[in-house]
Image (spheres, rainbow, N blue to C red):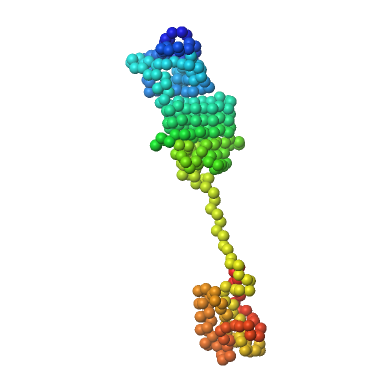
Length: 317
């Protein structure tokens, strides 16, 4: 209401709701006063719909209606039993738990280490600066994370509450975005995750699954990397009539077909490799033990004998 109002909350009061209505014309300061035994370090702040929820325990908490959408509904100051005070805004900066509705929500964190849970619906979540945590479950729909925090040492986390690492059906790079598909039709997109201009700002650093498996950026990069191209073996464009390996024939220039040598001699081209040369040397050495009239090394167009291959050619194209 009009004036500087004070709302008192003590341990054991349960779950209370504050609905402030007076618009601050300047100088107005409403106070939320906590009683004895309430420790400031144990306060947790949540964003649910348009409301600010102050959690203290499972039993005690306060909901301030429309805090995020209407300045008339804000509580400016928090006071503790020991006389210490703090603004609500400064306490929120320590970290905010943001929970969506069943609709398609646009959830935005604060400068602290926030926790964002979109729930059912196709939601967009942006934690802002700080070490933020994005929480997802089966059936959450098609969600998008928009990160933009280049703070050195920043460590954001995606936490899958009931999704095992083995439940992931696809890890894809779509443009500069990271897309993770899981469950029947759920999908998470981290926008600009692979952007090369400022990858540190746009990335989420850890992905934690319900089976205690954790993926780092390095592991994500490996999972989306394209498979290595298969090694191809090319053949040269030589004629099928030009064997690369020597071919051994029975017969030689000047020999009749009725008198074939017992030792074959190989014809060698100028392109013979080391294996061919060794083979030719071996055959030449063996020919020294052949009877007189053995075939000679060489093979020219004048040869009229019938060729009988001894070693089949390995032809490369």
